[in-house]
Amino acid sequence: MPEIPVVPAFWRFPVHPASVRRARHAVAESLPCVLRPHLGDDLGLLTSELVTNAIRHGTCGEDGDLVELVTWLADGHYWLAVSDPGTGKPELARPGVGSETGRGLILVDSLAAAWTVRPRPARGTSVIAGLSFYPGG
Image 1 (cartoon, rainbow, N blue to C red):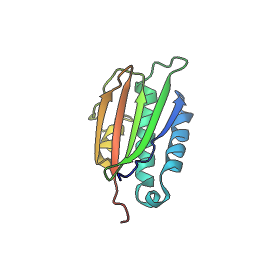
Image 2 (image 1 turned 180 degrees about the vertical axis):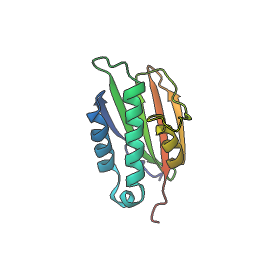
Image 3 (image 1 turned 90 degrees about the horizontal axis):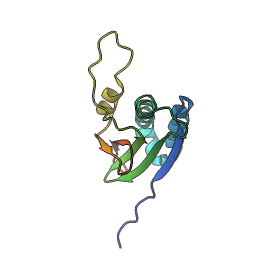
């Protein structure tokens, strides 16, 4: 009999700076206890960076704009997808020495085992990042 996969966790947050903390907390609480010591800090940082980027760059600030998060376990990775209604494609930046922004995806790139940007079928963009883990190890 095949192994039944874990149902993905799903949240929607309003486009507001307070949603970054709420999203980080929700994702941390959903992380299986056995993985928290191994992935908790990195997952929190990924969540903060991706939700912040979605709020700043992927929304129009219109009433009703939401940022959506999904987490799931698959193939030795804990995956996080952050989606927004925007049509832009996030790219790695090369910020200047004095720049105060532009380093979020650099952090994502260094933490994640893999990450990508995908358009959503109806509207918007998703950034998907996976953290590697070793069950039982």
